[in-house]
Image (cartoon, rainbow, N blue to C red; front, top):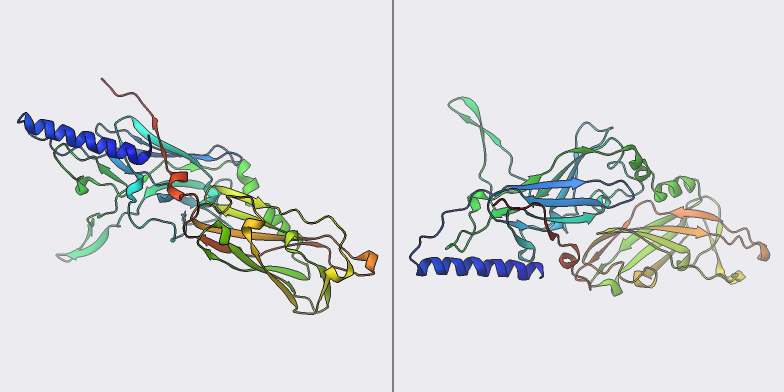
Length: 373
């Protein structure tokens, strides 16, 4: 049964129960108790996805906005004095609860999902947040309004503001009621803090970072000029430029298939390797770039990346790596040979996509405990 069908089925059962109670002259049940849901995020090492789970530990049913976009990770890195929050870009973070994600959890039920935390803590050119010794505190939902200080009778008094929708959790509607009790709504859930082990050192030095150090003295620079705001994967493009930053002319052999892309998707990192032509280039294939000279190309990503790489709506961060291997010696040409990587990523937005974000990423229901008789 789909998430939406499950929700409608539950709502229908509640309505039927209320109608039966009215026919028998029974009073409708009072408001349900406040929901008691627990959040847990577990790391399983840098080579395996992390786990997100939310369980109903209370005694009554609750309605959860089971939307993985609501996850936020508060990170206190060893080198920092204050924690920083990792979250999806503002364009992806929902402003309100999406009805397609609402799910009724009975006592003892829960939801879980595996995910790549680097989607939330993306760091171009090397991780500095998800590193050994970092303390991670997960949050799920919308930030609560903080307490304010007011003056009353010449004294400072802390005042707790009323929390308003949207809520991550609401009590399930009572029998005979058409809506939940907003006064018992929960804005966000907070999980237990955990520390990252020493094996996360590999995340702090990514391949992009290693390549960057190797190309720092290169006379060429690779710039991701812009990404596209595309309707779907088939129209997504990026524009990149290879520029000679030196004071001397450089000869280069450049083809778009010599550029590899690293794409941070909603579910992790994907490498696009178009596999260059293995035939030897002729003299006309080499380009001479004077000081400050540049070559710019626009590439359709669907031609260079595996099908489905940009299949879901959302934001994608794209890095590029250019490998120049042809020296041109057979033509008495001294061409540039080496590797150049982009300093900053291009952002590609897919507005609709062929794979709905919520269907691909929705949390699924699991049984986390047995109900007490």
